[in-house]
Length: 405
Image (cartoon, rainbow, N blue to C red; front, side, top):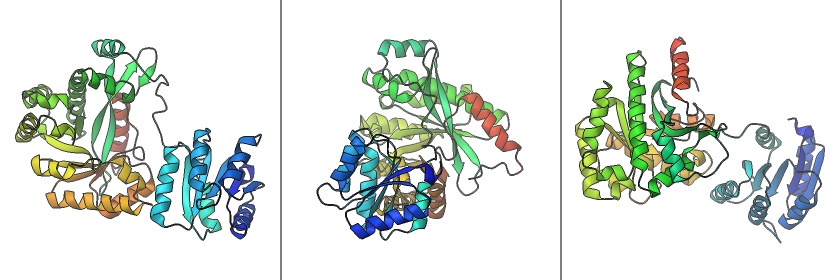
């Protein structure tokens, strides 16, 4: 959509800066421009205006109602179009305001530190017409299912892994995939994990899904390797499974039955899972490593015991939580934590995997910081077995056989 077709609301208490912003928008060919001197004026205008405003450009530090409250009230009122934040506040505070705005459900194009330039404003406005990051658009809108429905789906073999590729950042080669549970419902279509994982966990039935994902994921990875497409597979272990002292032997049997080397299988656990029934968990995880399986600590950095787990468990991979990746380009604390996590992985001689890579900016920063592997929607969304096979084979037919960012 052209800027001339958009409507704007400029929210700025400083008269000169408000007029400067308006003139910049006019210089970009904007025609429908409205203005407010504080958040209260802006909110009153927003709810009374007959047609929706496409883009709000708002300061943060204002009298009467500041930009933070305005963003909250706009989000609560259901405003889902675009917002650009502008402020002379410290960059850390501006990043916090960005996170808050997104948390209230408002679509944030970005934030600009004052003084604003027309070029920086135009660059963010280009994102207004861009699609939101892919969020499993094929998923059903139904929010909840009963345990009986879910168990029927398991018994009828309706659950399957979708595969999201993991790419080597240095070579751009696809080195493996993570198996993510999906429910192919006969009436509702593809059902996301949020609709069934917690129900299975709360009912103590999560292991039935986990074993299904292990069997199907390992079988698929074996078929890839047999077809000449060298690959590894990552599968999540449930918290409950770590209490079963026969876990390692069962996984070994599955891997052998499908003629897949243990080194090709990486088992992901959360740090919380590893703190429950510590003795059994450590026995299982140590035995899995003895048998050659890889171990990944998932969502690294989101809890309090990550460092302690690294001293207890022989991990081969550290998986950095998506929240640090998403904010690292603009939020200095997130960048510091990301850089520190990568340094920890290097010093422990284990692979670092960045999940939730959604933009070229994310990819470039991770390359700059020396991250090993990446996965996320910027590379590819999770795909069913056939789609993933076609995707990988298409890459393999290219002369470089590489994913090109």
